[in-house]
Image (tube, rainbow, N blue to C red; front, top):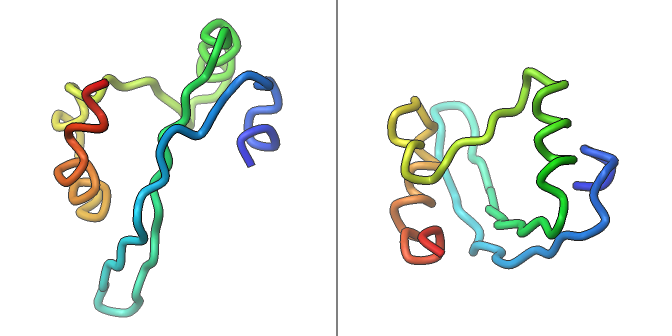
Length: 86
């Protein structure tokens, strides 16, 4: 899916796959997994993709609390601080 989404990356690895999260909304139940992806030698490509697409933005993990984030993502980040610090 990453190659289809960005079309530029060949050098990446999925370094973490979360357990399945269940999040209950008033009208729906969401099931989600989170992935951590390491890009190798692709920073310039990644920056170019983000600059050319206003739907994406690079945010450091330390900065994410400044932004409104969904409860599901907040739960994942809170439970996985040790993984995200690397």
